[in-house]
Length: 537
Image 1: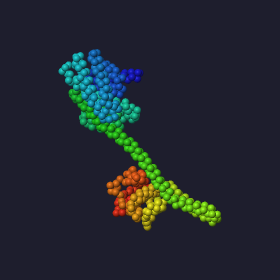
Image 2: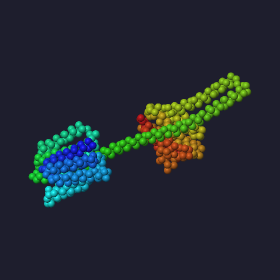
Image 3: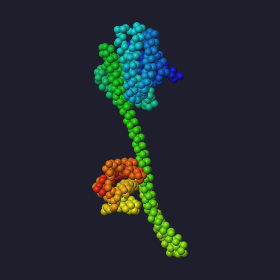
Image 4: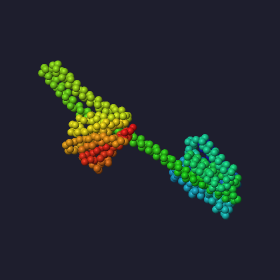
């Protein structure tokens, strides 16, 4: 309650003081002012931001201002009620059209301007001047002139003061006040020197010296600065009109005021239009950056999930390989065990039989242990770039897959006379090669080819190394060739294919090895070509 009362009396005081100054500076104590009427701009900003509770402040300010300018009690009361109703109408229409007092978008500024020009001030000017006409304060002959003057002066006041105050209220906590006062003080002094000290008489020259400063400040520091600089432009120009000097000093007082209003109006139009567009662009850019950041994070999370799924699928393949390579040693252990039991049953379990059991069972157990170590080491490689033998990495992958491919009747050919060194992530390369080999194996198992084979070749082109893996499974259907690197695309649904193998192959190559992969169909089958830069890091 106390806060509301303080706001009401503060607004009444500001309305009365600013209205008196506006009338004195531009029109000489007349209630009708063709120049900028600051009180209406202040009143509208308070009403829009604080709501209907401050309307009594507008009523009191306007009532005492009219009385002080020799307007009758009845007319003063009527005009005060009209201006209060105008502010109430502004609050209602602002909410109805969903306009924001923060003026965040061009729509908010545009809506405010339309309301001022075509609703609020036409209503205020027509009703108030009608009251003055009926109470004999103005004549019917001057009614059109006073009607325009009232409308134009209030429009100018609201265009200059309302946007600034709304932006000031909504951004109060964000403003760097020391910087704000410093910039405003320097610009105010700059205006005073140009208009009062030097008394520049050419309005176009004056405009060219002031408008760029206001526009640039608005662009770099924001609309709060730009709109306040508009206020300073209007105040200093009003003082120049009052002193009758500079660009606004001509023989006709009305011409002075018109030139002054045009000067102010140009600043207001430029800042509210260009300034708001720049603000919207900044907000759009910020929103876009935040959106991109969010989407990038989502993609990274999805890729991590896909990578984990791929690793799980790959581990499943490894377990199958381990099971396959353990099958023979387990069979041998079973035979050795059965032989030992048989000899024991026949009473022939002598030292020679025990030694045979010991040596041969240990051999099979060591073989199984080595198999586990090989696969464990394959998964425990450092995920860091280093210089390694490309030939050695390929041979290591072939060593742990050889038995399975051989068991499936697939021959893998890899012979190269030269050993190639590469600076990259060896573990990533091993994963890639294993994925492609498994893909080739699945393709070969679906063919009736008698002599199934995979040929691996290496070629040094100078800037890069070409690693090619070619099979003789007949090639990839041209209709799906462009899709095989897409996530979750699989031709092996009936075998529970995840569709992640080749997708993760491409991702690992691009992100960890900075390499590319292409697939071509030859007369025998598919040829996967990996381009590895020698300096990949």
